[in-house]
Amino acid sequence: MYQLTVKSQFSAAHRLENYPGACERIHGHNYKIWVTVSSETIDEQGMVVDLMQVKKHLDECTDKFEHRTLNEVEPFNKINPTSEKLAKYICEFMQDRLPVNIEKVDVSEIDDFVVTYRPEKSG
Image (cartoon, rainbow, N blue to C red; front, side, top):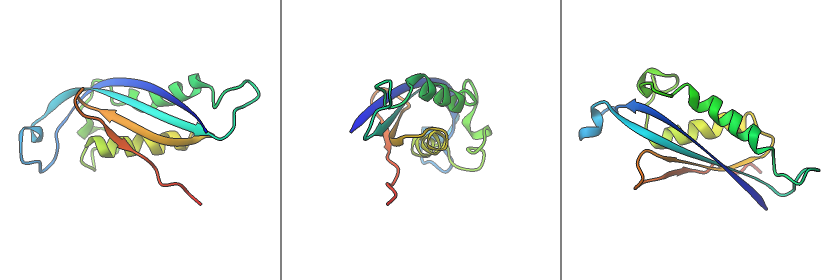
């Protein structure tokens, strides 16, 4: 099994709906995102997938959040913008655009915590 991990980051604000604490108020983070893809095989160039394609799609996904309030950006204007939901959203966005498996998406709002989303394997 081959794996490739690509990192991206963006700065954004959010507030957690119905959260019993300070995070219910608007606040900001410097989000770090890691997307790990995998394949049983490599292509004729010896790659899992062109890492620049992975980076391009990841940046396309996260650019719409840059210096924005997540609660005002689709789909988080309708769902609570937790790291867990952000990780799942990014995973689904990437899976629709890449010809390899998304193994996991890691999202970190602060250095002390990382949320991981692993999609269910089909079959």
